[in-house]
Amino acid sequence: MKDNHNHQKKIALINDLSGFGRCSIAVSLPIISQMKIQCCPLPTGIFSNHTGFESFFFDDYTAKMKPYMEEWKKLDLTFSGICSGFLGSKKQIRIVEDFFQYFTGPNTIVVVDPVMGDYGTPYPTYTHALCQEMKHLVTYADIITPNLTEGCILADMPYQEDERWTMDYVTEMARRLSAMGPKHVVITGIPQGSYIANLCYEQDGDISICRTKRVGKQRSGTGDIFSSIIAADAVNGVPLLTSVKKASHFIQKCIKRSMELDIPLTDGVCFEEVLHTLH
Image (cartoon, rainbow, N blue to C red; front, side, top):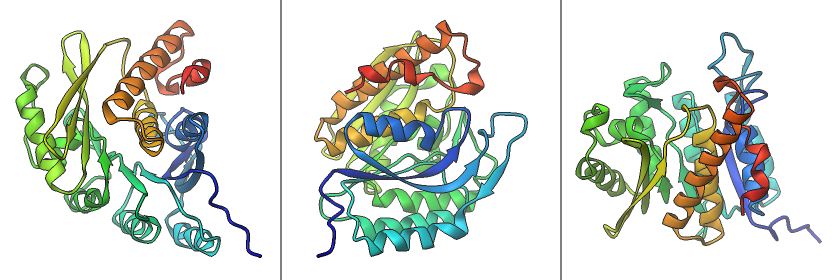
């Protein structure tokens, strides 16, 4: 009799793996596991350390992604959730689209973190053509978690200076993004004086704002922590606003502890120190 590998909740995690620097798979896997869900990574590339360092080793995994997926098909794996992060090329986005089409079942929750840029500027790899591909990919998502830069790119809206971000403007951005397909949109990292806000937009038009006291400086991996908690909570049936509040406060704790231990910004957040508090 053939083994059934689908008794436990599983999230397929599509992202790169950095050996040092606390980001992408290295962060998301323990977060999802701590929340009692099996995490099944599909690497898009292997880095010795992330690109925020002066030098790094990189192995492109694009050519290996489809054979990797084929083995999962042979095992008849099903997933409660699928979460995608940084994708470095048009070909990778197309492969992830194929993954969504094959592995998304009637109850699978798809989370797309459209990692495309920050501070008003797309990352160097994100050409106009690649941005257009990402716009297509988010149509498959149930939940998307763009920052302000990514939200502006996807919604075709101008990026604003810090003091010009109004909730009306961000709400219109979320509305446009939801019209592309996602039932739930979380716009992250909205500056509000000494606070950072996240806007939650539901497809029925319901809007909620979550504010957290700003601490320290931005670090690598915080977006990966955020999207991983959102994905795991969604699979566990936790309401979105509850999940956003949890993720925001957990990241705040991670940053505070990292500052206490004098962790360099490049090294990300020492989430290991507070992981036991996440449920």
